[in-house]
Length: 185
Image 1 (cartoon, rainbow, N blue to C red):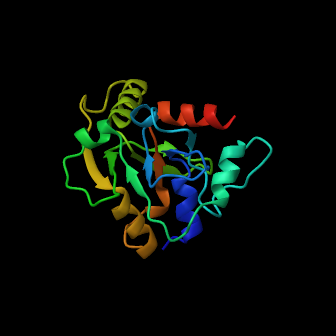
Image 2: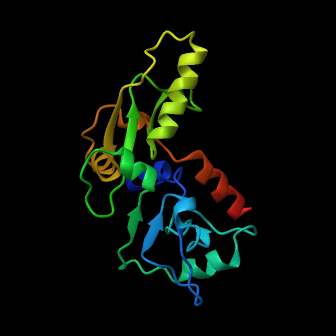
Image 3: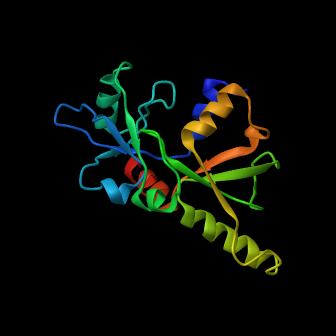
C-alpha cells in the first residue's frame, strides 16, 4: 500500500496545464497535452497543496492561483487527443489511458527497475525501439502494449492490490515535459 504522499510524488512526473483567468483563478480542466491546450493554457499545474513549494522562480500568477485553490472544487483531467485515439477502452470521466510496453523497464536512481506507464502510446513505442536497437534487435520488432488507466493504477496503489506497484513510474509526453520546464524557468 502506498501513502498519499508517495502517490503524489509519482504523479509529479506528469506535467499538467491549466487556464488562469484575469483574477488568477483556475478553470476546472487540466490538460496533459500542452499543444492541445495552448490556446487556453497559461501555466503548468504546480498547485496541488503539499506537492511543491513556491520559490523565487515561481511565477507570481502561480503563487496567486495557489492561494485561490478550493479543496472542494472538482477538477477533471483531459488526456491528449493522441492518447484518446490510441486507447481502446471506455474511460470514466476524468480518467486518462496509460500504456504499458511489455519487456520495457528503466533503471531507477536506486538501481532498481522501473516499469514505465506512458501517457501516450507513441512514447512507449519509441522507447521500445531504442531498447530493441541497443540490444542488437533481439526483441520482437513490434512491442506488445497493454492499456490501463490512471484511476485504476492510483486505486491499486492506495489499496496495495497490484504486485510491483513500487516499481511503477509515470512518463508523460517528452515535449510536454520540456514545455512545462520552460514555462517554470
